[in-house]
Figure 1 (cartoon, rainbow, N blue to C red):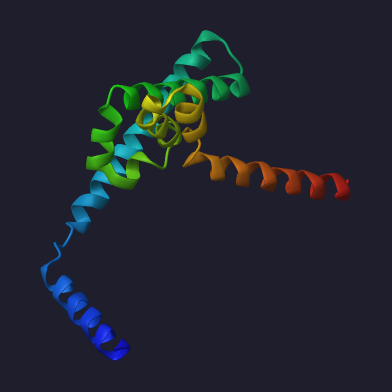
Figure 2 (spheres, one colour):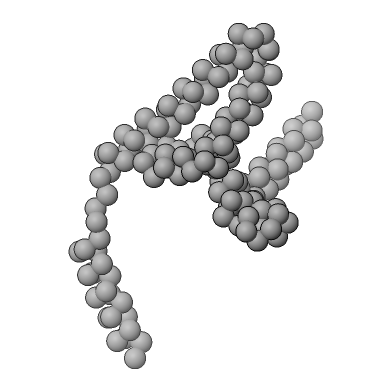
Length: 149
């Protein structure tokens, strides 16, 4: 019986490979590069504007991050960032705005379940492991740095 099931799965896989659509790889790469680059250019323009106001380089970098996260969250809330993501693919998830999108999207999806069990509990479904890994890695790097000095 197991041999029959394996042959059936193999036949299905062969049929699937014949009919599955082939993605336009070059077009997808170009869109990802252009949109990801455009997001970064917008971030650089924001940072340059903040530097002209008179903030220092560290403060301008922090403020730029805040503005970019806000813009990513706002565009996600308005439904625009999903359209950008459909066109750009990975180009929209790499910059900091993609991180904001990964937090806001699940929160919006589960808001009907309430603010505590819906928004609060589901907000970090995607981004939570990234934040946890970053905190643990930062702890160990800080510990190693502290022990060496």
